Image: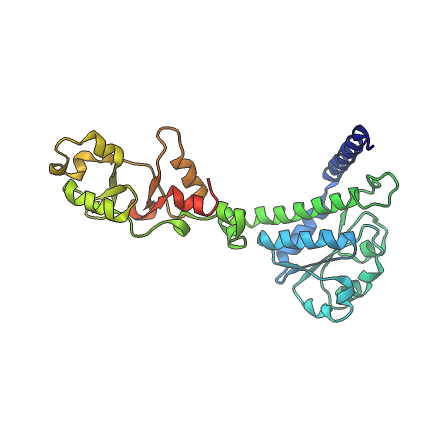
Amino acid sequence: MTDSNTLLTTARQVIIDEAKALEVLCDGLDDRFEQAVQMILDATGRVIVSGIGKSGHIGHKIAATLASTGTPAYFVHPAEASHGDLGMLSKGDVVLAISNSGEAPELANLLAFTRRFGIPLIGLSSKPESTLMKEADVHLLIPSLGEACGYGIVPSISTTLTLAMGDALAIALMKYRDFRPENFRDFHPGGKLGARLSKVSDLMHADAPIVKSGTLMGEALLVMSQKGFGVVGVADTQGRLLGIVTDGDLRRHMQGLLGLTVDEVMTANPRTIGPDELAEKAVALMTMPTPKITCLFVVDPAEDGQARGILHIHDCLRVGLG
């Protein structure tokens, strides 16, 4: 029977060892990291990431993270590079070559190509005297701290450090470029992440239920019923939203309702949201405890608060928000 205490002890020790290694990596960062960032910023082309084995798997992730955060990048397999994929590299590119030992023979042709054609090379390794680091223009050195298995043979600490270095590069570049959530969404339109980064303008209904100030409630009720949102907005002659009429407002003014104007019934200065705000913020506004509401009118602050549409909580729920 498996000893669960032993399993948990081993698992915790692995995580402890990797966490300690990350602290060492953090403390060891120096101006070479800044040089690598500057080299990528100066590039007019893409970042080409390459590595073999576990370094290759980590390289795939680093390339994907760079590409999704505003730094054009892709992964080139070093073995395939020797059989034609070197043609993917061109002037203006930067190569990020990854090898824990710095001696992966599969990288040899790639390294030679960068030296022959003057393509900047960033080496990421734990061996400062290795072939890779001797050839590289900039060195990203990860500390050589063994592996979590205790035998130095199962890539674990080394891959964790490599991955962290790649994340540090990507996010440092992202911050420098002022890459914002709305930019991030352009590369992540699908899934839960895409939903979280949706803008209000992506989900809103442009044909909002709006009547002019001074409209009698009989006419306003027809608009309210036809649009099916359970509310109607009240705007001035310039289209600026003045207030809204809700079911609650109707109940509070039942006596003589049809003889009243919308201005006498409406709730003034309602909660609104801008079209460029994240839909996630709209959900937060609608679900505030006092009171919870089901709709938000979308007003454009750049156009003096003109009503541009309406967003229903169901629109947000439909794409996975809320």
